[in-house]
Length: 385
Image 1 (tube, helix red, strand yellow):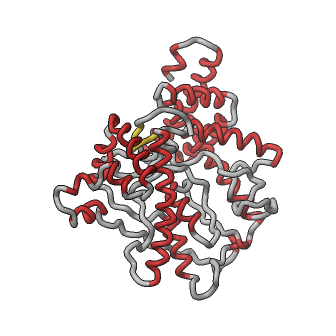
Image 2: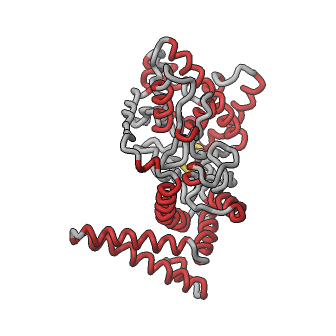
C-alpha cells in the first residue's frame, strides 16, 4: 500500500482502492472468528475467494504483476507475494468448477458405493546421513570430506572436467561455498524422508507387482496428483521409472531432506533401488556442474502454483485427448479453450519468470523445506531461469 501512496496517479488510486477492498474482505473472517461464529467465518472465507477471483480477472491484476516484476529487481518480495497469494485464493474457485464438471462427466467416480479410500503410511525420516558417514572417518578427514573440491573429485573421473569444476568451486569460495556446505551438513533438521508422490508410486508398484505388469489406473490415465507441483528430485525419480506414470510439472526446487522409500532394503529390491538412485544422481551431477559453471541455480520462490501446468486441451499423458476425458478436467483449472491456450501459456511463462530466483544454498535452520517459500537462500541474483 505504501508504494501506491508515494505517487499520485489514476492507476495508483485504482490499485489502492482495490487493495483496501480486498484487505477489508480479508479482515472480516478474522474478526468473526474471534467472536466464535463459524457460519459467518465460512461465508467470509467464501467472500474472500470471490473477491480474489474478481481481482485476478481484472486489469488491476496486470498492474500488480508489473510491480511484482519490478519489485524482484529491488529484492522486494511484497508485490511478488501479493500476486502469488491472490492467485492461490482464486485457484480455489477454479478447483470447485473442475470438481463439479468432473461429477457431471464422470459420475461413476462419485456414485460407486464400493469405492475404497486407502491410506499409505508416511515414511519415517532416516537418521542424519552425514553423522553416519563421518562416524567411520578419521577426525582429520571429517571436514575435508565435505569440502567442494573433494566432493567434485568424487563426482567425475575425467581429470580435465574435475579440474575445471574445482576451479569454478574455488571462485565461489568468496561467497563461502564450503561454509554453506558445512552448515547444511551440520543442520540438525537434515533427516531425509520420502515425498508422498514417490511413496505412493512405490506402494502401487509393490501392491500390483504380482497381479499385472502395469499399475491399473482409472481410464488408463497413468497420473499421480498432488497438491503442489513436483520437486526436482521427485521429477527425476518419475522420469527414471519405466512405468510411464506422470505427475505435475516440477517447480524445480531442490530439497535436501529427500530420500527414496525403503532405501536400506536389501535383496532383489535393492538392485532396483540402486538403479533408481543412480538415475537421480546422474541428473543431480548435471545440475551441480551447470550451477557451478553458470554461477546460478534454478528454483521458484513458491513451490505451489496459482494456475495449471498445461493447457486444458492437452492430456496429462502428453498427447491430445478427448475433451470429455478426466485428464482434460483435472489438468487445467482454468478450463480454457484451445483458442485461449496460447495466451495462457504466455501468462504461465511470465508467472514462472516472476517466481524465479537464483539460489546457491539452503538455510541451515530451515525446519520445514516444503513450505511455499521453497526453502532456499538467495545468494546470486543474476538472471531469471
